[in-house]
Length: 109
Image (tube, helix red, strand yellow):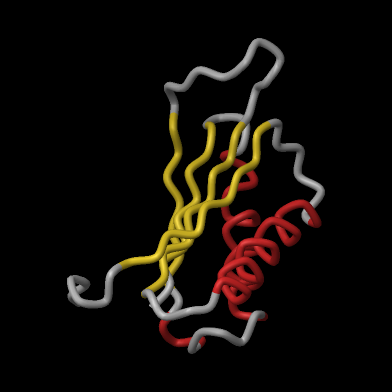
């Protein structure tokens, strides 16, 4: 069920977007918290954005999961994704990860 959404600065990170997304995806798979078949990932490039004066790039990853996971599991997912993206060695001036819990009583698919 998890949705992994990478939002990033274009054109600076466009050549690396697939690799960043794959790293996040593989990290979520490796946690063994979710069924492999249920994980979905996508990326969105932004041409217009404002960053601090010396920053040229950003990547923000949102991982959306259904409620019911423990605080430790949620933190593990966020830490795993963050570490996996850093391990790519891709220069990202502003990197952030957000784990968002969706209400299972209102989620439909």
